[in-house]
Image (cartoon, rainbow, N blue to C red; front, side, top):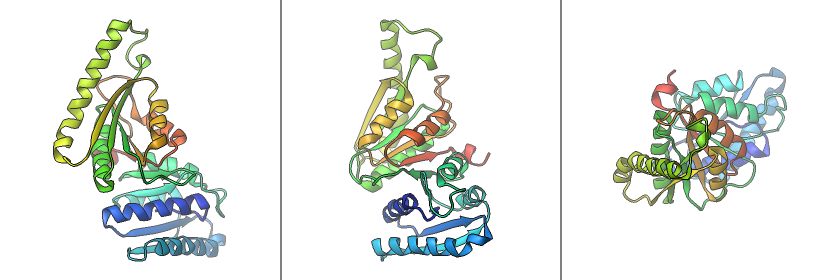
Amino acid sequence: MGVDGSEDSVRAAAWAVAEVGHRSAPLRLVIVNDDPARADYAEKAVQKAAAKCRAQAPHLNIDAEAVSGHPVEELLRRSAEAQLVVLGKRGQGGFTDALLGGVSSAVATHASCPVVVVRKGVPTTVGPVVAGVDGSESSLAALRFAFEEAAGRAAELVVMQVWREEGLLAVPLPPFDRAKVQREIERALAEQTAFLREEFPKVRTREVAQRGHPVSALADAGRDAQLLVVGHRGRGGFDGLYLGSVAAGVLHHAPCPVAVVRSAEAAVS
């Protein structure tokens, strides 16, 4: 959990505490200080966040540290040894020139492990987990992550594949062909989820193939969601459906926490 002393990062830390409960894993809070003059502030800020987390869940293993370095570089380095990195969206604390808004976007798109960005506001603990997929390696990794999250939360999983004609052809499709594409995407979506539905039989799963703008549709679905999961740098069978740009879009617009998951191949590149 990367913190910066802001209320947004403290709120994200509270989300991370709940997530740790699902995973039975330790939680490490880290503040990365790139200015020696702010060392005292950094230490106080991370210890204050840790105290709130321990008060929320005294039974959990929670530690905290202030380290020197570049925030993005240090968090990316640590992501290689983590199950998950959690960040606030637009943190503004004592580090006004190292806002977690910029840090979160950079870490989410380059980390070795999944990254969850918690936006401003109090995340809901009810509602479904929503996964946006496109058939790519990254989105399949995101789909597995979403199944695991839904299982841990005993939540419904909504798997969405959103398509638009601009991503398929240069000209609009006539209604008959549009219906044909819709059926094909519904079939592909069912194939993507089939083996994971067998692996996670207790997860209630609903599949949605929808024509529209991917960012808009996923952000709208996130209004009632506990978590929205997307892949990064996805390239599926439908040219133009790149979850790299979709991931960036939902990070800015989704009202719920957003998990960005890279494929194993992308994570080491």
